[in-house]
Image (tube, rainbow, N blue to C red):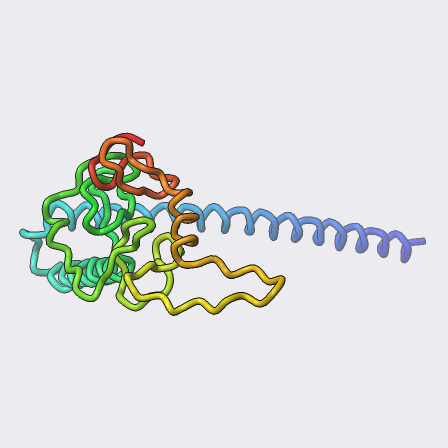
Length: 209
């Protein structure tokens, strides 16, 4: 009997030890999760502190920060250049009031109605052409507008249409296609300019549509 009593005590001890180890593992995992969350908070605070310091001392920082702040300024300059290249390719400018992308050369934002800055008139439009459907300036030679997706309509002499075979309908002409597309455009009651269907303000005169 003594043998079985000792075996029982050993099994109980082992069981209790396993339960305690399981509890310890769970507690450690919980504490590690808390540490990770606090580290994320600290790292975010470091980021906010650094960003605030650069914003306040971009021109009078200590020499110890020269390399890092110089890299930040240079990277931000390159980011701005890349964003400008994207806008040039798309033929748009960014509205300073609401941040929407609007066709280059538009006098007013089609989303908020704010007038575009005078500097917008100096946008380089070389090698760009205006989409007859939405007014966006896009690279020359494109078959479809990169802003609205509609076919580019150019002043070109249309080839002579062959007479359709008996029982066949002729394909719609470019003029018919243009008329169908213009029917979906929003015509400004003030100046008569064609705007995209989702425009809230005329891009030519700023009149509310």
